[in-house]
Length: 336
Image 1 (cartoon, rainbow, N blue to C red):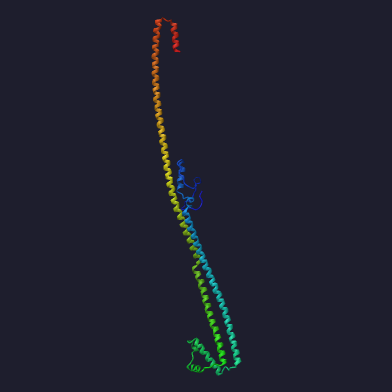
Image 2 (image 1 turned 180 degrees about the vertical axis):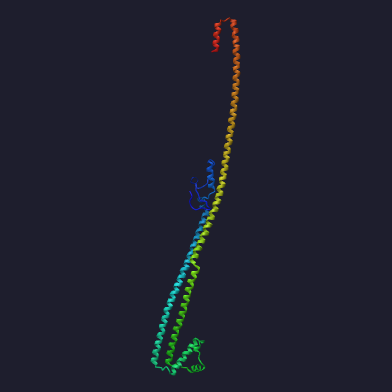
């Protein structure tokens, strides 16, 4: 009965009567011997799945399984980290957007404070104090952005600015408002830049994932690892099976030689018995021939003796002058 997997189209078999081992039996018929020869060409996994080799193969196969699983788990961890990173980036973008709204609220508050300052100090928009404030504001903007043409000072404006050593309370409060508003705007620009960077990061990550398919590649790599492990395991088992087969063939050849030697000894014994029987028959024939010859001689001697006895009897009768009746009686007695 075939069970398990096959190697090179050869299915593992097991001989129940011999514990899975091949046994040569010269007493089988030719068909049985042919069947045994075919069985000797099979690889018995019951023999090759035991011992150090199987332990080593199992250990390597388990190691390959761990490597394959680790490959997938590592990629899964990377995917989770990537997803977490994109989620964190998205959350950071949302936080920055909320911060921008807060910064604009701060600018609105600064503008409201300016209106209160103007109402408090009642400065005329056409007054020199207001013009000097505007010149100071332009100089501040030029300092932040010296290459902006709109904020460049003329020689007259620079000379006049140099003469302004003291600032009025109105000018100080308004410049403080400008500084606070500028800080809000700087924060808005920084937040917008970070938002663009975050969006670009998410987009690039998603685009890269669409191109590389890391999990699919990890699965393929894991499959390659397992395929290689299976090939190595099958190769090791096959080699051990070949070694076991060669060893079994050697044992079988030894058994066949021993059985042939026994058969030859039995044949010699039979021939010896036949020779002894022939000798005995020949001796018996010679004995029978001797007995027959002796019997014939005895019969010849007996006939001669009978003739001699007759002659003597006749002589005796003649000598004794016996009656013919008596002679007939003697003849009758002799015949009896």
